[in-house]
Image 1 (cartoon, rainbow, N blue to C red):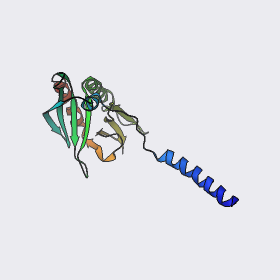
Image 2: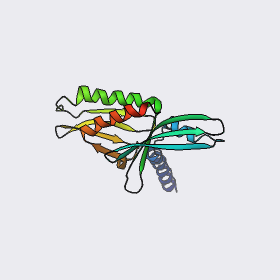
Image 3: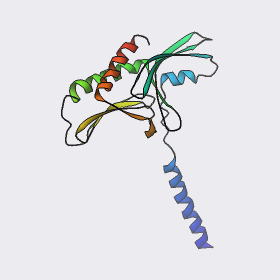
Image 4: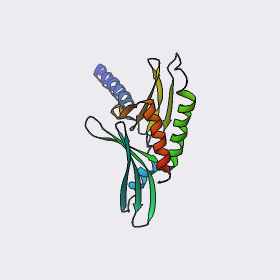
Amino acid sequence: MKKTLSTIVLFLAFYSVSFCQAKKVDDGAKSKTELFTEKSGSMIKKEFIDLEKIGPVKFQILKLTDVLTNVTTSGLRLEGPGRSSSKTAFLDADEVDGLIKSIAYINASVLNTAPPANDVEYNFRARSGFAAGVFNYENKWNAYLKLERYDSDSQYSFSLENFVKIKALLESAKSKL
C-alpha cells in the first residue's frame, strides 16, 4: 500500500511538472490592429487596400473603422501561403518606421559586408510576432519575413533585392496609413 501510494504521488509530481513545461507560451502579444478588431460592443468596417505582392507575400493596407464611434486605425496586413491555410501578420502604423529603419540599416551596414565566420542574425520584431531580418548561412546573407511567431511554416525567404524592394513599398505605403 505504501509503495502504491508513493508511486502515485511520484507520478502526480512528474505529471504536473511535465504539464507546466508543455503549456504553450502565450505572451499575449497582439498588434493594436488586432486589439481594435476584438473590441466588444463595436461594429468594425474593414477595408483592404492591395499594395503589391513581393515574392510569396501579399502586402495590403488595412483600414479599420468602428462605425458606431467613428474611431479609425490602420496598419499593414501581410499574407503568405501555408501548407494548410494562409498565414497573416499585422504591422501597426507606428511600427512601419521601425521596420523601414531596420531594413535601411541592414542594407547600408550589413549587406555590403562579407558574412562573418560565426552565425549572425539581424532581426526586427513587431508586437504581433511578425519578424524580418537577415542571417548568414553558407557564407552568404539570407533575408526573410516571418509572419507568425510560433509557426515555422510562415517564414519566407527573399532575395536581397526583394528585401530592399520591401523597404520602398513600406515607404510609399506609410503615407496612406
